[in-house]
Image (cartoon, rainbow, N blue to C red; front, side, top):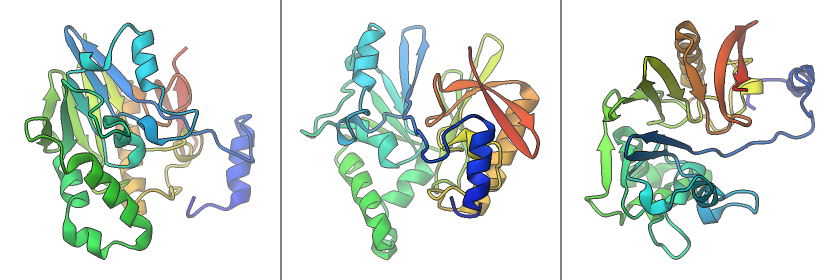
Length: 253
């Protein structure tokens, strides 16, 4: 949190009957099943996180699927909790039959040698992690897409540059309904949806993030679309409703 007094943060959490001394942050990739297509959105930490993370493959098996069933992986941005699940610790590709589709703007930023050289020490690790993940990815696996392009039938990419330089959302349309995967548009909806102007520590461009949050949430609520977020509380999808100066996430029942 960059621009909100701690007392206000705690008061807002308490008003929603949430703990005020810690925050639970889930990590939730999404799976889209469209006929024979199985499209994964983001991959989590894989084998590189703590003991309560890296459950994606177990969850796929519980749903009757294997990693080899995934034909496409969509990446919203290059933070480790979204890309580390692409490989295991042995360096093997987790989803061997999948095309990996990444935002062109995001790839250009994190794979740029000059930007890495100029980055502050605290960001060097993120650059190095992106390179470990993508530098040796086969050319016929990695697909870079421009914002606004359709990345799969019924799935449109939506630029939301701010959290990172190429942070991208995905809008899904099916049977007359819309769903937005909003990635890290708001890490903790109980805070940053309720107060979209509050700045998240991890947003690289806080002012752009503030504007994008308001624009996207206004668009979602106006259309009554469903939405899901990578760090949203279980079940990680539902609807957003206008509330005071911001928005309230309403989890699906």
